[in-house]
Image (cartoon, one colour):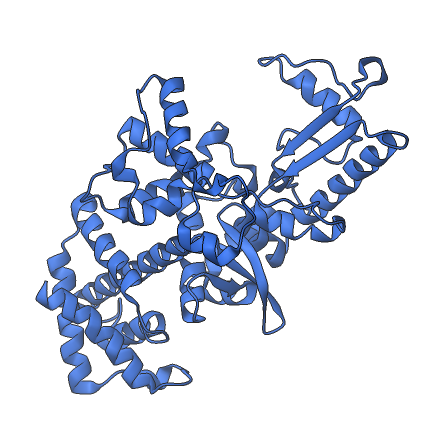
Length: 423
């Protein structure tokens, strides 16, 4: 719908859209009286793509929905002739729920595959046992036929661990299929999930399913996009739930220089700009925290991966700045500054096994693909542990509530040090 003008009259906008599709000839506009159709269903797919320069996408979407409702009401005064189905990312639909007050006006599409635990917990009504069908198998068979690849089902190497959650989502499953077919990522028993996740996020940024044109984040560099996602994940992790955070927490954790660049590109206020970024990825609204609306990663593993990636980025910065300080004491960080920055990211929340595994895989991936000297990282961490044991953690520079700040940060440092020094 990024090619559709939501501000225009809907009938006229559809006519212009049809005219613009010269490479894909479409029938004449059925909403014009001379082309009347007794039963008509119009599907508007991509509500989240109605982003306009200088105006909040939310407001544009509200206007568009109101216009479609008006058209439907006028067309169905005596008999139901016209039905409209509007689809879009969950976060945009949630922001327009007030426009649909009648029962069953909002439909939630299930993934291709729902596991037994979710079926049990959600209490679905499934008289025909449709939830027992793993539609991923059907999709891959059809995809194989269309591409001439000969797939008869979902490849076994994609039906494991976190990849089950990913391949259950239509768009992510398609992105995995692109990578699998082109062999841009290795999918084996020993595959590094971090490589797969990095490839997926890059494809979402590029919007490879839409001719590499992403109107939501046009002008935003991929590096800045990923850095913001990492900051969101760190904010959520520090908040106690790897999936959920608020706009104010996101702003607190994001690099101010990146925020300024985003604001200049979007020409919108901070709330609108952050909402636009959230819409471009896999987020949805999730209740209220401290009187502020919260947002969550739709896939928990994305939050874990991005948090781990942010932690490893901090490790890289610590190593780099300590090296610079050794060469010139006026540059970089000394040990106390390095420990302070480590405590800021790893001292507020306990690290679980899932984030830790992503950290290990991220280090392994950087070693294999970027030829990083992780032996030097190992020595840096061991040196910091030695300094910490002798001088303690510089927690006086931080304000941490709850558990003893020294205990929390020392535990985080020693956990990482144990991995590095013993690996």
